[in-house]
Length: 189
Image (cartoon, rainbow, N blue to C red; front, side):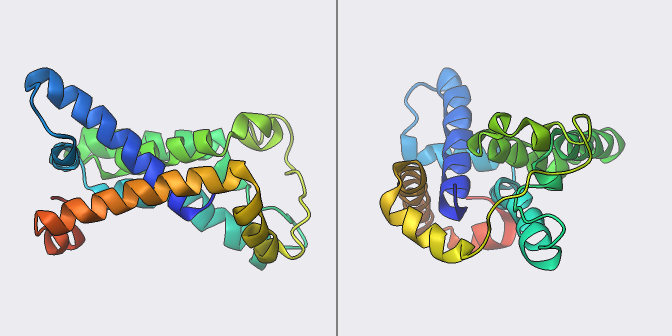
């Protein structure tokens, strides 16, 4: 899955969850206001960064900086250990300062691992418990292959289309409510 799929589907799932929670309180809430419901709980910007965090870390490290060593864009930040560490840090921050930003980051990372179906790569998911090495991938012409797959592989283009639709819906909600500036500045609508 690529950027728009991860960001959009994570935002959509969180929005549905917040909307479901709030619709129990007030059953006549419109779907457009669900984004507002979500932003009353969290900073949406942090959730989106969390949904991309494993790729933000692993793609440069595994495919560019240490290409000869790893030859894979799914390494350290795609592990359960990474998720546990940022969740533990989030719990510590919450207990210490009542700050939830790291827990939001961990939630986005969790959704990323689910959307990447990391259970199909147990050596990576359970690293270092199943060994200290990562599976190597053929990353020659990686970018060119991504564009080709984006146009021809349903498992790639369908999540991206869903993500685009959700992100467009969110963007339209920001524009309609005249909240673009507030979102960029505070992560709220």
